[in-house]
Amino acid sequence: MNFKFFRISVLILLVNFIFTSNSFAFKPRKEEWKPKDTTNFVSKFYKENENCLKCHGQKVYEYSNESQGTTIRHNMNIERVINRDIFYQSNHKSFKCTDCHSNEYSKFPHSGELRMEAIYNCIDCHGNDEKYAKFHFEEIEAEYQQSTHFKLEKDGFTCWKCHNPHTYQISIRNSENLKNTIAYDNSICLNCHSNFDKFQLLSDRDEINLIQKHEWLPNQTAHFQNVRCIECHTKTNDRILVAHMIMPKDSAVRKCNECHSQSSILMASLYKFKSKEQRKDGFFNGVMLNESYVIGANRNEYLNNFSLLIFALIIGVIGVHTFFRMIKVKSKSDES
Ligand code: HEC
Ligand code: HEC
Ligand code: HEC
Ligand code: HEC
Ligand code: HEC
Ligand code: HEC
Ligand code: HEC
Image (cartoon, rainbow, N blue to C red; front, side):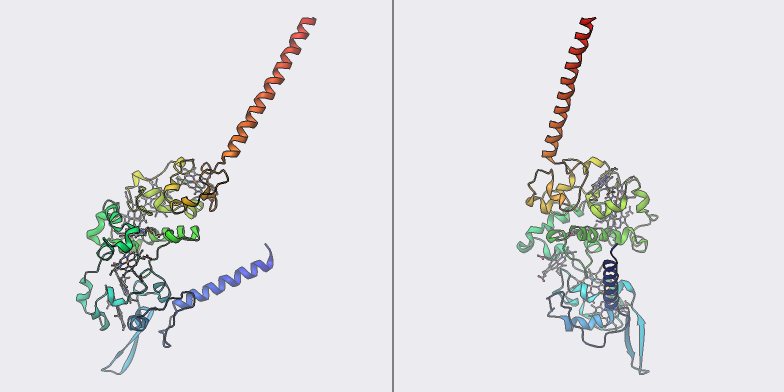
């Protein structure tokens, strides 16, 4: 590898690391927080939200013990830390914390009863709303109710378990980088399926070893970087962009040719949002080629015809060759 390129990559990695570790800095923020330039968005409520984020925005919070006149520092449980930058890029970035949570949370320590508070579900706000008609929330809700996870509702499974209220962002709909979208969508599933701490909150089952369960799939890494879990685990539905009916494991896609063929299921799932901008240079399922080469799904019809032609020519040549050989043999035997 080019040495200069190597040094630049290391630098980029370092800068990235500093950036990410800084957003989870171990110090309470004394100075007023200002939104980063990366988003042009400035919340109307960012001052108000600081009343919560001064404690929930990083791994350390402090409060004063007035009777003793001391300031006490504690660690905030990582599950209760909300990253400001990610929150202000999420779909619900224009909300204030207390739009979804009770105003009572402004008091600390929080009252125990608040834990029992009911929180709105997606459909309560988005159901039957013209503005969000393109997402078909009602259809998604109906699919979810048939998915394998729905039976865990009594244990606390909801749409929020996959759509983290403080980070969720639509991705595939306006995806500019399909690999990032795949990674994002898969991280939603891996949040529980590669984190037993979260998994066991919902189920008594033993830990499911994903790598082992998918051992039948060659080059897992390449596959998991190029397809989403939902490609194999949901039933596609023409009416919505992202299928939500997670099927029992026995119905998962296992046959290679469901993807590696001209009628690849990927055209109705992963590549659905792009299938309008088909490439027209003769490749079957051409849009895929912008992202990856899926053996069997991306054959080129010109190449196909060309290889037929070559095949015919070869047969022809062999035929002619045999014909002259036969004549020669015949004339030889006639001579003798
Ligand atoms: C002084 C620090 C502090 C402030 C300010 C604060 N919180 Fe908290 N919050 C905590 C701590 C510590 C916990 C975990 C322990 C607990 O539940 O009391 C917590 C827990 C929570 C929980 C989880 C409760 C549960 O167990 O299910 C929610 C939700 C929450 N806070 C919301 C808010 C909101 C919204 C605000 C702003 C209106 C806010 N908090 C302000 C410190 C704070
Ligand atoms: C769009 C609604 C919404 C907004 C806005 C929102 N929350 Fe939440 N929050 C929720 C929901 C829903 C849960 C429960 C998540 C679950 O059940 O997994 C939650 C859970 C929490 C928890 C408990 C830990 C956790 O993640 O389960 C804390 C702490 C919290 N919110 C703080 C905040 C703070 C601080 C803000 C403002 C920066 C905020 N929330 C904004 C909906 C919201
Ligand atoms: C308390 C009401 C409320 C709840 C609950 C809620 N939303 Fe929203 N949602 C909104 C509002 C209001 C907006 C518009 C925000 C804006 O324009 O800044 C929005 C925006 C969105 C968007 C972006 C729409 C676009 O055109 O860019 C999506 C996607 C979305 N919500 C999905 C969800 C999902 C999924 C859930 C449940 C996990 C959910 N919402 C729960 C009120 C809600
Ligand atoms: C098992 C995980 C899971 C559950 C549960 C889940 N979703 Fe989703 N949802 C996803 C994934 C993954 C995406 C794809 C995100 C992306 O790339 O935009 C998605 C996307 C969406 C979108 C955006 C689709 C679009 O057209 O752009 C909406 C809206 C949505 N979900 C609503 C819901 C609602 C409502 C519920 C509950 C009834 C729900 N989801 C439950 C995983 C889930
Ligand atoms: C190429 C298709 C494919 C992809 C991609 C895929 N799976 Fe699977 N998955 C399967 C099949 C087939 C099975 C059934 C295996 C069996 O029965 O032994 C399965 C099994 C499972 C099981 C059930 C294991 C059990 O025994 O209960 C879980 C959970 C699971 N997958 C989650 C995921 C997650 C999370 C992802 C994304 C990171 C993913 N899968 C990606 C095809 C796939
Ligand atoms: C909030 C945690 C959570 C998330 C997020 C989650 N799952 Fe699950 N999933 C579970 C639990 C818990 C089970 C075990 C259910 C049971 O007890 O049988 C499960 C079971 C499954 C199964 C096995 C069903 C069977 O037949 O045994 C599949 C497949 C699966 N999940 C796929 C997915 C996919 C794909 C995603 C992402 C789109 C996802 N899960 C997201 C918690 C989660
Ligand atoms: C859910 C769709 C899907 C299924 C099912 C699937 N594949 Fe793939 N496969 C892909 C995609 C997409 C790629 C493209 C990877 C890339 O661009 O590098 C791929 C790539 C490959 C590659 C090349 C990997 C590499 O090293 O670069 C092989 C070999 C392969 N698949 C074999 C199989 C076999 C064998 C099966 C059945 C056991 C199978 N695939 C099932 C979607 C699938």
